[in-house]
Image (cartoon, rainbow, N blue to C red; front, top):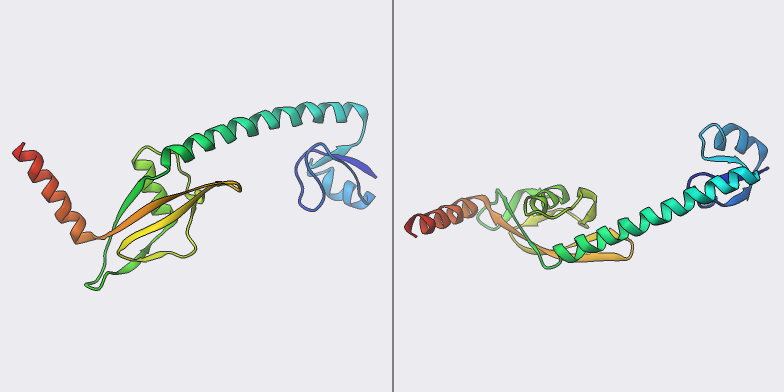
Length: 164
């Protein structure tokens, strides 16, 4: 049975593709889930319009992601965490904490954009990759400081502003 895909489906095709599938697969899964419609001229025309609309949305999304990547490039996220004397963290710094810190600085960063191969468990500066799309990545530095150091640093900055 020939069907017109209404969504991108892994290992089958993209939105707007006309594909040949088994009748049972079409009737029992694709059609009830509204993932595909029968391949008629009217449906093909409607999907072509939808495909054009989605292409425009992808372009806009791509521009937004490029602007966000340029804005955040070279930024530095400072995260305070409890650590022992040797600089080992009692917990770890996660992608969610890094994204939250960057959002506090005014960057539009979702949690899933931050790519950590493993959680950060040491005090220091760590390069972290932000993956906006498969072909658009950038790197930011994450500075992990011990929590008591962060409190002392905040006190020093407040003292210097009081003196001024």
